[in-house]
Image (cartoon, rainbow, N blue to C red):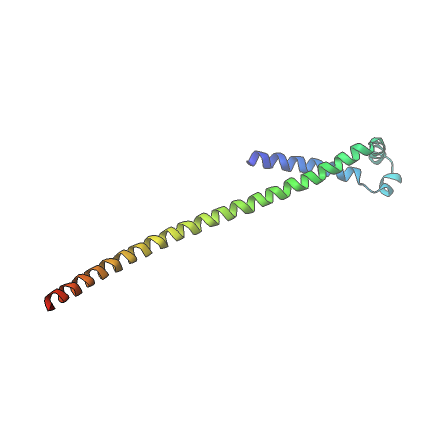
Length: 121
């Protein structure tokens, strides 16, 4: 599971880097030489379908990140519910013991009353 997250983060980082390169403002790229000229040439050589694919990859990487966050929330909710269940089990056991004690006391009380009724009749 951690390996998937690491791969997802690596994939996300890669996609973000590509998107940043693609989305550099042309005003920065146009007026300067050196490494920006190379970037400008690479950007010009990217087809529209490749640009769309990169945008789709970026959207997918964001969705993967959100799914990972949701997974963490659900996992935490499950842990919380398990703790609540254990607490309820303890409460139920305690209530069952109290109920059994009251039931026995009521039984003894009823036997005493029946005994008095028999003695008076």
